[in-house]
Amino acid sequence: MLKHLQLRNVGPAAKLELEFAPRLNLITGDNGLGKSFLLDIAWWAMTRRWPGDVNPRLTSGRSALPTGDGLASIGFSFTSKVKTEDYVSEYRPREQAWTGRPGRPANPGLVFYAMSDGSFAVWDPARNYWRTQDDVDVQDRVPAYVFNPTEVWDGLEDSDGKRLCLGLVMDWAGWQKEKSASYDTLKKVLAALSPSDKEKLVPGELTRISLDDARDIPTIRMPYGQDVPVLHASAGMRRILSLAYVLVWAWEEHCKAAKLLKEEPTRQMVLLIDEVESHLHPQWQRKIVPALLAVAKTLVQKNNAELQLIAATHSPLVMASSEPLFDSTQDAWWDLDLERKRVVLTRRPFEKHGDAERWLMSEAFDLPSGRPIEYEALVKKASELLELPEPDLKKVKAMNEQLVQALSPTDDFLFNWRYVCKTKGWLQ
Image 1 (cartoon, rainbow, N blue to C red):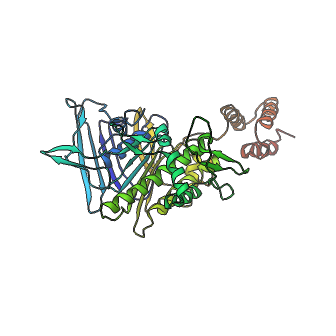
Image 2: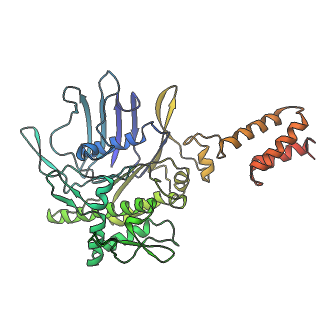
Image 3: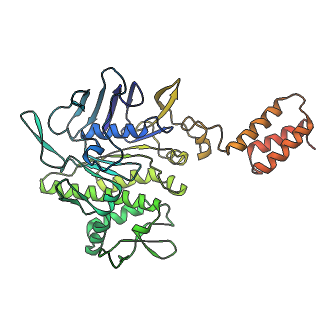
């Protein structure tokens, strides 16, 4: 579990520090303030490899660079299987690299990173490791499994052309044909990640989609009864299907590797999810965080399992949906803001707002209202009229007509406007 980050002269802020909560961490903030950057740093802290360096085909996840003239450093700590690991890395301009102790990092458990562009990265303590010879790291195995969006579906190879993963299409089809335990796990994970109980994600029959494609393609059974090939599913469905597949693949492969090593599978799992709501319908957005916590427990299945979810979000529905499960003793909300041209990270008290609209107006999103900009300006003008001791009654009447056309009959402001105007005799 990741416990602490301390950054100096790297990223959008000259100084930045945070203590992660052990279970759920929600990160909000405007575009460009560093949400994705924090997740990249979190991944690097636990794995000592940048996703974009492991897989150059990625368009994100590159090595962080200093942003000032002073010493740049990344300090962090996380709990491993046997101890708490504390670490400080400094940037060396001549080597164009971050310093690090030789040898593999301490074991933080299984680390899973879902990036906003559909890329994924997995660090497996049973399979991703290396040895040290004469104080130099000698890579025995791949340092991490990093997929670009295409590789999630079609498979992943190393630099020598060795197949590391068959990909969603072939693995799913193989599991389904064999009726394997992996297929049973996949079905459970898909059910947990479904948008609702009435619209369960259920695998359909395998199919062929082209005379020129010899693969058996998995399908999803739609609520209207058709089996749709996963390659033709909507963007939101593909996001969830790829999440489900990589989670199941990573866990199943870890368990197989642990068995070969005659070790117990890890009881720790860290999930890093950028833009957790990406491509998802509002119905899905308000379920995704509770579903991910449930899925992690489904995979690990241990009474002493330690599960940590760190998720960046732009969605007020995600924040609202977290209210029933949020526990301040094990969860945290982190908010990035721009104050006096400086990026500031604040751990805010998680106060319940009750619905998504009120979250829009919270410190997470800083909007004056949930209305369109034009209606927001209209309400502001109407408010200014109400503050006048004796407004022009023609203007009041004209404003009333505009408000009636623009706002819902049940809008709170329209109700208060009518009440005040009638009480003061401005409207009949």
